[in-house]
Length: 114
Image 1 (cartoon, one colour):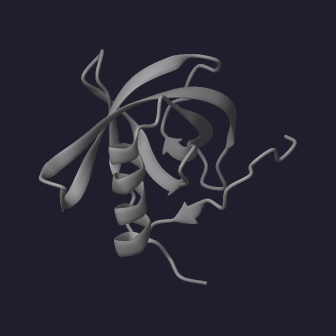
Image 2 (tube, one colour; image 1 turned 90 degrees about the horizontal axis):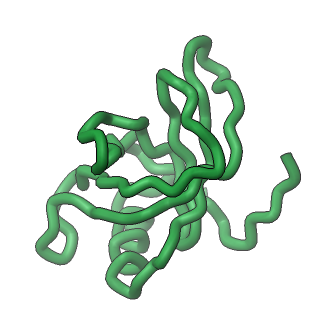
């Protein structure tokens, strides 16, 4: 996989649950995030080149919201270091200013510092 990422991805101290809004089923847990992408870890492989309507349950309210709804396209997948898990990279789609604010709050409040 060639790294085309332009923005630094931040690892979070929580693996936040991400739900597929169409199926209402958990799709995976957030590992890292930037303003234009994220990586999830999941127990089952996620199909590639698909746009998902997703919802993330936030660890606390951000701008009065307890969850964040967004669209993301799956771009790549590979086995995780833990057997039986897969990592999938997503591109965030139609990111609005309030989405950027949510992402920045997640990074500021729950991101690992280098």
